[in-house]
Image (tube, helix red, strand yellow):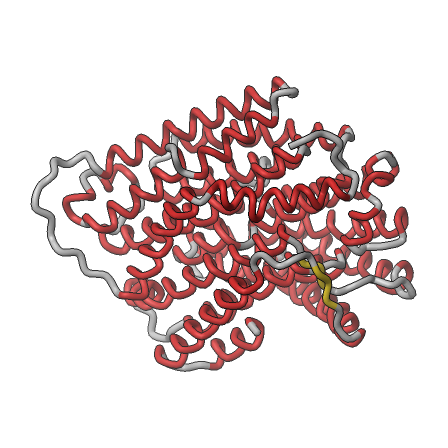
Length: 524
């Protein structure tokens, strides 16, 4: 449905039809994801015709990316896209041509968590964008609106992310993976300024590197196991995790996840994406794109449990968590702080995947949920503040409570849910550190990184409330901006209070499912 809605949004001319399409899409996505929560794992197959359409779509999309790379004269994009085309042709026509791919879609608790985040948080960001983009274009003094293209790629992004997390076949996942790469390129470069184009190009070539690793990982995995079905691979988890020959394809796929999740040394594409309109930043950080990277690594975690690759992933995640938290401490640009904080939290999730115990996986799932809501809230707050005061520097937000009291309080709620008890982020971080008790170096890096996160969040919150309390002016904001902020703030608080329920209702069944595959031997 989002794919058709994206086309309608592109064809719509005028605010009224665009608003109707976005609100209708948001309502449908939120309702559909809510009704799916709590369901038992199931599979769903589609007509073989769709398999052919995905293959055609793969090559068409890669040709578009190749043309973009040629136009930009970016040799990395051109050569790595050509390599992907060649690798995909070999995979589709020589390796998997007669293989049974299994069901097209496989839905379990991890998929449902991701669908809920993408559909609910992503839809609220889309609603926020209705009011924000109107003011944004007025600020840029555009003669012709670019909103049709913007909402086309925004809605397409949501559809691709849902397809990615529901796909059972890794070849289907790759198709949706590349759609998110192209959508991010278009959305980051939306404003058309030199700096926007430069950062969009950087995001493209870095993610093309990951795309190439993904394709060649699929080739090696298909040759080694004879299948690209996640369901089939998870069923073989015990024998796969003891087979050293599979470490090469798994390493390539994990590397693809690193690039998508903007882990060091690929973090610059995500920090550079801050030049995009605020809804794009919020979407990339909270409910799409970077979450695809950690989703892939968590999906593969049972397959490399107990291997050197698992230990390497834990160490790498711990190092990136500590390093990027330290980078965030030295920033004064609000969006840069949020960007490095996102990369840091994604690294923590990756470290949990590397620790690879039921407790660590539970912590990773809770981190995904709480981070998505709080980070979306903070990005949208910073975007609205920037519209009003003309700056995203936290030094310029000093005493914000006196000028924008409602937004200041909501921003403070977002900050506090990221660092203080009884909120879920602190609980999940504590669980992550506790799960690393047998790996001293990883546990030490997680503890130090967590301390640094408190430092930059406390600094920001202190600046917002640095002015003395007193009568505050009335603060006006469009309903399309105010509503998502209030809903996300309430969700951040309520989800934290419901953390034990989330743990039992969503996270524990997921780890039980992984344990049933034989990937874990310890107790929770």
